[in-house]
Structure formats: structure tokens, C-alpha cells
Amino acid sequence: MERRKSPYPKTHNPTYLSAVRKLLLNILNEPSSPLLQLINVEAVRSMAEFEDDNFSRPWFGQLMTGPQLFAYLYQVNAWLREYNVVIK
Image (cartoon, rainbow, N blue to C red; front, side, top):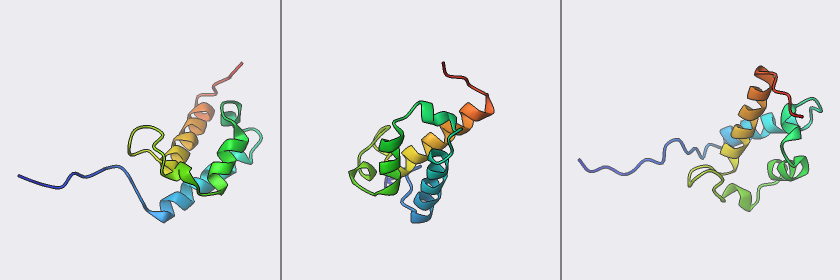
């Protein structure tokens, strides 16, 4: 059987981008967010506030561009909170 390859789980849905962007900006604006200790806040904020070439650059393989990076950072923050990870 011949079929076209599917690039799952890549999404181009603008609603998804808007949702993960909003989630990430909320984290960046919350001083108690544990993620802030691990990232360059201003660089990530710049990516979240302005669409630029970061949205076409793959971050984690060919399918992981800007929106997927935002979702990943959101999940890292949630994991750090859930398990009360302390960074010294």
C-alpha cells in the first residue's frame, strides 16, 4: 500500500499557537514560576511575543518548531511544580 507520509504530531493550527503562547507568557509573568531559573527569560519572552525565524527553525528534530517549544517549556514548568523540584 502506498500512502503519503504524515508528519504527525506537527500542528499548524493558529489556535494551538495562540493557546501555548498565552500559557508560556503567563509563566514568564509569574515570578514564582520554577522554569524561570532555567531559561533566559528575555530571550524566551522575545520568541513568544514576536513571530520570527524561530517558528521555522527546528528545535527538537524536524517537527518541533516554535509552538512545540512553547508547549515543551510549559510542560517542564508544570513538572517542576508538580514534583516540587528545587534547583540550587
